[in-house]
Structure formats: structure tokens, C-alpha cells
Image (cartoon, rainbow, N blue to C red; front, side):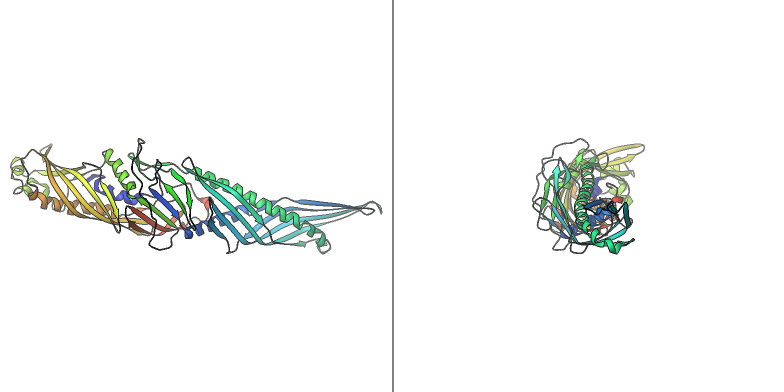
Length: 491
């Protein structure tokens, strides 16, 4: 059976869309990161922050005191390195009025440093006493907070840190080497300097790291070609919307042809729901997304199907039509036939609660293979009503479709008048034994939902409601990935 898209594309397109975008001012795709997803994002961000902050070099400090009649005392701390961070379980992430607030609390840290001490006196003659060693510092009760604003910048997402601060509650210095017990009190005088260094350098490094994330977001591709017919424009629409425990990103989501054009499709209000279940990600697409894709493929003349093999092959020979269309058999006795099916108009998809329907208006031309010639003898208009469901298993989504009803009308004929009531049974056989099984075999292979490399979707399931379809999913790192730094940009 030769094919170029027809019925399979109708439902395969339904299963192909991810968090993608289109041009225009209206949103047809909404992606919601729920509280469970925000918690996952918080753990990822904190884990990346810990990796980027360790090891972290802090500035050294020096103190000099001149005592009358005695001389000068000079002490320094250097090679101060924060080499371990442990973040407690009390960290939170919450949407604010215009951004995300992440507060990591109950943090403990380990710091190493070198210390040196020298005493110079000329009062009793040239005299110098010096000592040096190392020290370990335990930081406890540290808290780091950051407020990140995510804005729409010319269709991309821009990330900016509006606030970032660090507070150290307790800091304990323990000296090693030399006569450390003798200098402990003096070295403790550096406690405020070390505390100030930690509270200054950590926010600076976090802000520096978020600039890389901002570059990543703005570098996401804004257009992805699916084939030589269609492309997805990944432009975001409007600023993210912050709820009490979620963030919503609105995307136009309409398919576009290779030649950009303006769409007049209207957006339907979106009510995102996963039936009360708690999921990290909710991705909602209204039916205009799928209808725009079908319209693009139709206008590109890439939706047709040639049927040359069916289970009952005798029906593709004029002898099988001998008593249904006698003139066909008399004109071309025992000649093989093929059915050349093409779209008369773009298919229309309808999404309702627990079902997906489609109306397909096609022209079916009967071609007779007479010797070396292919002779079109008649054209029949076929209007098909079909319904299907979308299911998920693992990271794949699958579809299943069945024929609901169809109607026939004769558009033209070179073999006289054809009574549609006489051929309705044969056409029913074609649709149910050739077209529908072919569509379902394609849908049965499943489509892997495209996501950012290094992540995987878990426990995906589908919810349909009036004029929209919602994919509900959790997110996890892929097996071979454990950190953001190893992620490529996109699939």
C-alpha cells in the first residue's frame, strides 16, 4: 500500500506535539509546571548550585596591630576554600508576584584555610616570632535566598536575578599546626571577615551561574522543522503566569508552513486539569493546534493514499465489481484497479471529553490498470466520520481510531451512473479492512514525546476535555544524566 500521509497523519500529528510554539499573539498551547514539578526544579537547581559553588575560593584577610613599646603583631588568613556544602530538607520554592523565590535553609558548609602569625619587636632588640598552620571552619545555619524573574523577551524566555542574599548564623574556627592553642583567640578575630566573605561571594557566584541559565533559555531554538512541509515556531506568548503553587507558560502552538503566514484561528479558554492527580508537568493543547497542522499538510498537497493491496484482493479487480457496476467490467474485463484517495479539504479534528473525533472529506478516484495504461474511470466523494482515543505507556503515546460513519456521492464517471447504495458495502470493506487497520498500525508504534535531552517523562497519561487535550507527566533525569551541565541544548 503506497501512502503519503492521509489518514495516519490526522492522528499521528495528535501524538507528535510537545511544548512547542507558533507565531502570533494567541496562545494555543499551555504548559504548567505544578508544585510537584517546582519541587523537582528546586532540587535540580540546588544540586547544580552546590556543584558550582564547590570548591569556592574566598578572599583572604590580614590584621596588623602596633602595640607601643612592644612592637607589631601581624596575622593573616589565606587560601580560604569552601569545599563542601550540605543543604537541608527545609528548602522551599514558591512563585512570587513576578518571579520564583527559592530559599535554601539549614545549610552547613566546611571551609579550609591557612593562617600565619608574626610578632616584631625592636624594644628589646631585634626580635621576631612567627608561626603558621591550617584551620578548619564549620559553618552552620546558613540560609541562601534568590528571586528570579522570568520574562518574555521577543518571544524567548529571559531570566534575571532581582534579589540574592546569604546569611551565616554560626561559624566555628578550629586551628591546626604550630602553637594553635595559643593563637586561637586572635584568629577568632577573623570570624567577621570570613562570615562577610561567605555572605558576599556565594550570591555573586549564584548570580554568575544564573546568567548561563539565561543564555541557555534565550538560545533555545525558536523554530524546528518537522519535514519539508511543516515547522514549529517555538515563540513564547506573553510573560509566564504565576499561581499560588505553579507557573504557566503560554505558547501559540500552531503549525506553520515553510512560508510564514498569519493565522486567524481563535484561542479557546484553557482549563488545565489532570483529574485531581498530582503531576510535575501539565501540557495542554487546544484543537486549533492539530487543525492548523492538518491545514498546512493539506495545502502542501501531501495528504493522499494509494490503495493497491487489501485482504480481499479480488475487490481490486473489475471482476469483483461485475454485478455492482456492470459497465466497468464490460469495458475493462478482469483488469486490476487501484484506489487513489486525496483530500478534498483539510480534515477537521474535534476534541471532546474522553474522545477525539475527525471529519475527513476525500475524493476517491478509481483507476483501472489496462495494459500499460492507468485509466481513471470514476471519482467518488467520501466523507468519513471517525473517532479515536489517545493513550500513554511509559514515555510513548499511542492512538487508536475506528470508523463511525461515512457518506458517498458521485463527482464524475466515465462508466455511466453509479448508484452509491450499491457500492456502499464495498467501500465499507475498503475503509475497515484497509484504511483503518493501516492507520492503527501506524498509531500502534507509538510516538516518543520529544523533550530536552537528559530528561525523561514518567507516567504520562492523557486527559481530553472540551476542545483541548492535556498531557500529564512527571519528570526525571535520564539514566545516563545526573546534572544539568551534561545536557545538550535540545532534542
